[in-house]
Length: 191
Image (tube, rainbow, N blue to C red; front, top):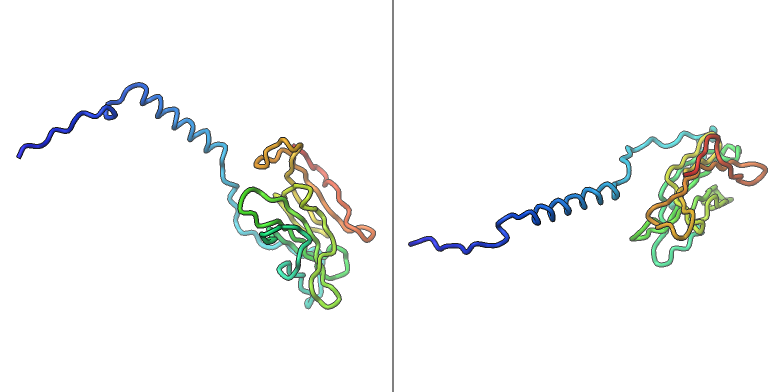
């Protein structure tokens, strides 16, 4: 039997236009990959140390047992980060929780809430440090030395795409005279 002849196919011969199309596609992929980078890798960090000694039987309030004052519609609120410490100097730890709606798309804004134990021992929200309606997200967060510190990402105007926050601010909340007072820590910057 004789091998059958395969007809010559036009796409099997490379021409300069093919190389130009390939180079353009590769350049597009490289440019797109430089814009769409994954977040920085982070290792599991040990929990923040308590800021003041608390009685051995005083457990920090559990954010899983609280209903947060955040409107999420059909999705639920999730605790993104949490840290505990004695913020008001009473010897009992409070818990600070960063919470947002479990949105399937985009980056939902965060709320920052302070929890304490109520009269019956059940945890309850006693302060809202950052309202989700501000449209801000928390990129870094800690409870240290009786204060709550956070790095906030936001938007300078409604015209800025929600993917790309263009405002960064470092803030600190400290308990003073019966309320949490917000300030910018020394060396804070805004971009």
